[in-house]
Image (tube, rainbow, N blue to C red):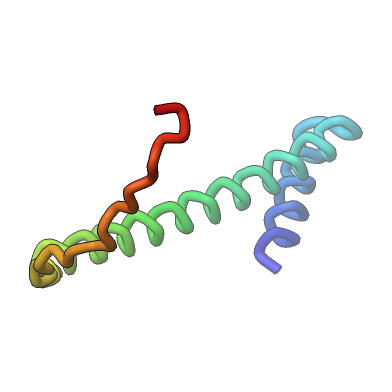
Length: 87
């Protein structure tokens, strides 16, 4: 709704300034202003949530998992002795 209002106001101001092309230019400028304002607001919200997430990570660090207990080496199967037929 805000976008439509900005386009209409921009078109009216553009038409008052210059008839045909001013109308179009004013509408485009109004649309761009509202669009950039919304993007700026969204970026600010994302930066704030990122800052809060980083602050929580610093305040409550995650504990490192306990090291796994060491396993004792189990003897594997004995190597098979193969007679060399060429000997």
